[in-house]
Image 1 (cartoon, one colour):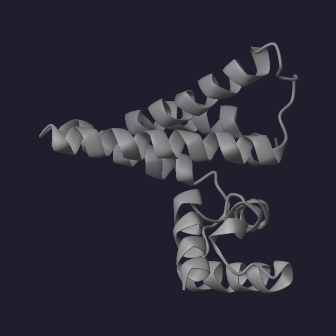
Image 2 (tube, rainbow, N blue to C red):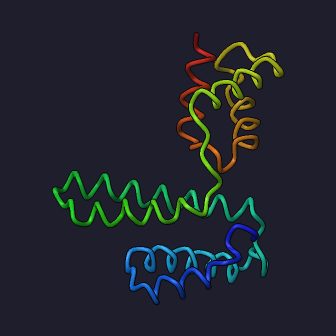
Length: 150
């Protein structure tokens, strides 16, 4: 849980600064962590891989909510969700550029000898592990589809 070990301190700092958006975001992370830790299958500590998956899920939820709010003409709520997504993203490893993702995927395709869409699952599995936390799954999937279908 190396990425989230200063969460309580960050919450205290946000309270002192009266930063409501940051405080809401940090509390959402803490709540999700507690849910995982208290679930029957969860352990007392979560590792960095699980923490990254959790943070990515929280960011994705916020982005999807923002889109829905914009569609419903509620920009005030959409902006709040986007701000929370930004705060939560600060705990994730730095995202790599699309050109770097393409290079990694091309290397994986060359290693596996994948030549068509039948091998997409294999390539996707390897790419997801290599790029965990550094790239969005949807972006990885799109690039793999483009490379394997051409």
